[in-house]
Length: 240
Image 1 (tube, helix red, strand yellow):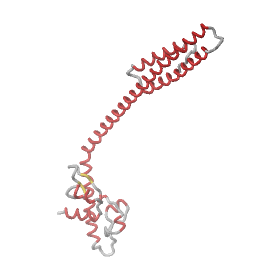
Image 2 (spheres, helix red, strand yellow; image 1 turned 60 degrees about the horizontal axis):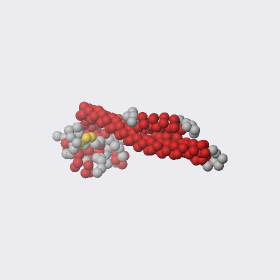
Image 3 (cartoon, helix red, strand yellow; image 1 turned 180 degrees about the horizontal axis):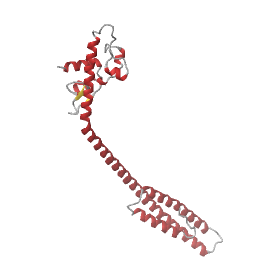
Image 4 (cartoon, one colour; image 1 turned 30 degrees about the horizontal axis):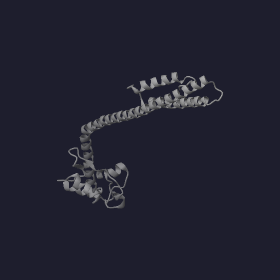
């Protein structure tokens, strides 16, 4: 931090004003460095004003020779001018710091924007490249589950003598009760793979699953999910 010689503040002041001038005109300056320079200037203003107060007090000493009184007067007047110059420089630094802060924020926002755009494009490419295959695999699994469900339900409706009812495949795989009616309380509480809502890779208004005509009328306007009984009915109507 700059210190000021109370007997000769001009040298320190000129050095500080020179650094302020370079900072204000330096395109590589940062808001943090400018703020630190402003704080240094603020502290020097206080010291210059203290020097002015000392000089004015010295002017009032009754036994001081005239020459020293005039010298103190000149020092007080010079200090007053110096403090005003430095206060004006502080205003420049404040404006410069605010401008740099705004530029830095703008650069940060632009950097975040481009990063988000780059990441967005990467994910969009993954969706285009991978989602059709994911959709096809998921639909194939659902179709297999629905077919097996139908087979199990048909067998359970007329079991061989002495044989227990079969669990459906998803219940076996995921560990939940999965045979009998879909209308039981435990069935209502179960969220099945076959109850999934899967967007279509073919268009934003289509649903790949469940098998409804379109997303708006088949899903959104329902304002509720599909029970397994609903899904089974839709799937059954679609079968040949």
